[in-house]
Image (tube, rainbow over all chains, first blue to last red; front, side, top):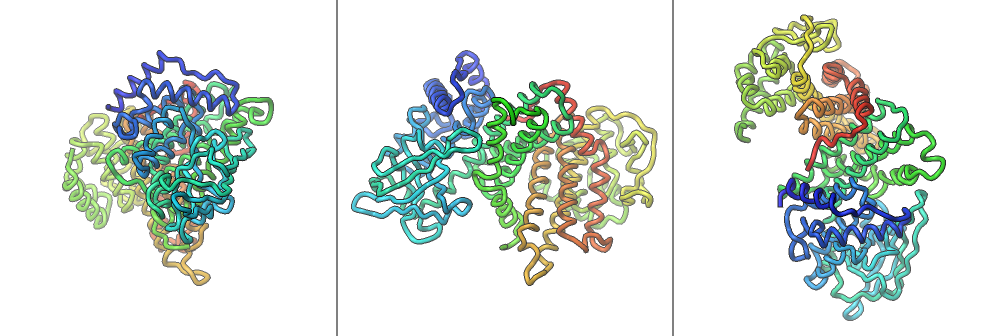
Length: 362
Length: 262
């Protein structure tokens, strides 16, 4: 399946099938809409392209997933943040799960299940390798104790891709599991956030027994698994985020009574730069290049573009963020997190300095 | 299209010609000798990317922007074209012009004639690539200095504030480079030049700060690149002017163009 053919076919299909959201804007509403969109796109085949056949996909290049994401987001069919989560969950399973666990992937793609990613911990933000949630072997199971935080959609999730410590300190002591969220001993507490959409949660593990067959990869392979999602996050996910930001600049142009050319120009330049950069990154990936530290450049460009765009919106739509119930408020506030999640802007600059500029150690 | 091996060989030839050049006229002749004009006629995109990237990096100058503009206007190569309404142009042979910020550019005055859209786009792409090349050399000079210069018992490259300035420089240059690789028409060339100008000024600011005292002297090469970037940013539309123009066109059309697709 060629990109252009896919895009043309998809657009025609979306023109005929009305999947526009009809909900109240609540998180429950967004989640129901997401499932509806996934189900329809999966049944029509669009959601299966770019995923391998042995995981329920139809094969074809990964870039097709980015094209699909762009169309979904450009038409406002799903909230981009929650839509892109599967891009960092399904690939982990596809690369590291046993054939038996692979059977879960189609449920995720088809919107039958929501999953979450248990990585961050209260004491473990930027320094992910220091995580301390413990898994101890007990017969044919592992017993898990600890706490995760910033776990998106945990309150909706059927399963969790969980990082735990099974060995000593550092990278090599980490192992990953696919854990059922209805296992006894798991407690989820949603976190109230400043932007008012409580999509993050704390997850507590208190003597949770997980069958040994639920380990992803081998014991001690957890760090490799966690790092393996980077190319997915930094290609298809980013492209969808960029599409969303273009969509919001469209909206700003439509709504701003008097514009400021200089500010609009700056905001558009930032978007154009990350769009060009991201396109090159995805084509490198399609050619089979290994994506690595250089994607920190993409990450910084994207976060900068996002914050500049919403800063511009706040300037050009005076009061929209501060008064009444305009959707700009929530999105403006959420954009403040762009330089924090997925590795802070500072960590990205550290990586660029050390790995791309070879500046040695701090 | 030229193959990769030929390109690498040509790139080496160009680089040493630029390193050895004693004058703009000398380099102009050397480039002609190396087949610059034939290459420009045959594969303009590759020719411009190669030659202007290297001019930027090496800090050498030859008045070959004239050829890029003439080629885009389908006129014979070898002449001189005004770059501003006041008639400013890269002179041929290009006698140094000591009154200007960057005397090596050999600026002269000729009659002004508006550029076609194609010429403007080709010229902006070329200048953008040259600015990014110059930015990369400023970054290399600052990096070298940060690793060599020791204060408080360690290289200044070990201080996070210094590292982050250099990281920020690379991010700006890579964003501009990506845009220039997608500069295929007047609009994308305008965006590319604006991003390049912005990145060049970012590189100048951060690298000069990292170079500190030595970067303020005329005994270190940094100032040559800083002067070059300021002039190149101004020519055919500065980052500041183009950004405003781009914003005005968004405002007028109320449409955000998606200029690049997967």
